[in-house]
Image 1 (tube, one colour):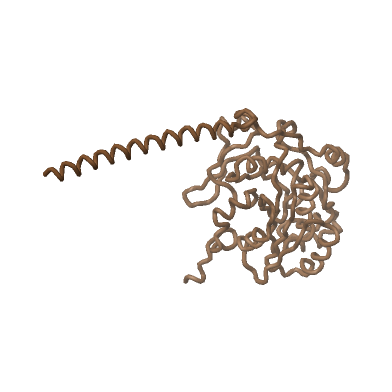
Image 2 (cartoon, helix red, strand yellow; image 1 turned 90 degrees about the horizontal axis):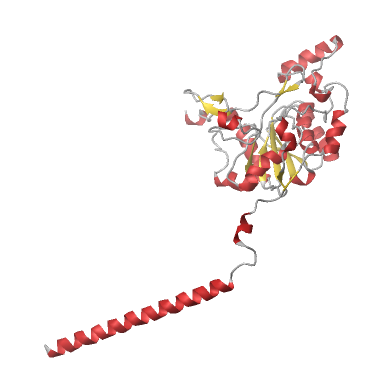
Length: 336
C-alpha cells in the first residue's frame, strides 16, 4: 500500500512538471511569434493593399475619328442593296448561306460601324492591367467575306497587345475557297490569325474545344463566324474577369440584318432564362440594374454563343461537355 502511494505521488509530481513545461513552451512561442510579427510589419499601410487598380480610357480616338469619315456601301452600318443585274448571284448565295452573301462581298471587310452604345459607355474607364485574349471562331462552310470580316473586326477594334491569337476552327468545310485559299490569305494579310482544321464534321462544341485546347491567352472569347466587333468592345468584357477570374461575361449582341447588312441594336440588354421546355428566353433587366446602366448586371442563364471566360476557369469547369452535338443537343445516335 505504501509503495502504491509513493508511485502515485511521483506520477502527480511528473504531471505537474509536464504542465509547467508546457506552459513555459507556450509562453516562449507566444513571445517569439509576437517578435517575428513585429519584424514583419509591412512598410506600406494595410489599407493600401486594397486600393482599386488604376483605370484608363481605352478608346482609340484616332480610329474612331477615321471611321466617322468613312463613306461607301455598307459603311456606318447603313443598309445596302444590290442592283438588279446582280439578282441571280444574290439569289444563289442566299440559298447557300441564308443571308445576302453577294451583298456582303461588296462591303469592306473593315467597314465602319455606328457607335450605338449607351451614352455612359463613352466615358467609362477600365483597369489598366487587362488579361490577354485568345479568340475562338468555329465555322462550317461559312461565307468568305463574313468569316473574314469577323476576324478583321476583332483585330481592327481591339488593343493590339491584348489579342494574343485568333483561331478560325474549320469544322470540315466542303467549300473549296475555305481550304488552301483561306490559309494563304490569312498567312498574308492577318497576323495573329490561324486556321485549325477538324478532319471530320464534329459539331460546334467539338470545334470550340479544339480552339480552346490550342489557346494560350489568359481569357477565351468565343464568337460566331458572322459577327462584327464594335468600338471599344473588349475592355468591358475583360475587366470583370480581371477582378474575379470566376466571372463569365456576355456582350450585348446587336443585329446585322441578313438582307441589307444594316447594323442596329437588338435591345439594351436582357437577362437569360429557360422556359419549362428548356428553351432559352430573354427577360427584362431588373429595375435596380436598369438604373445602374451601363454597369454590368447579373443573369441567371447565359447564351452560349458569344462570351468571355478565364481560360483557367474554363478548364476548372471541365470545358464543354464533349457529348454535346451541334447547337448543344446531346448526341444520342450511338446510344440507340
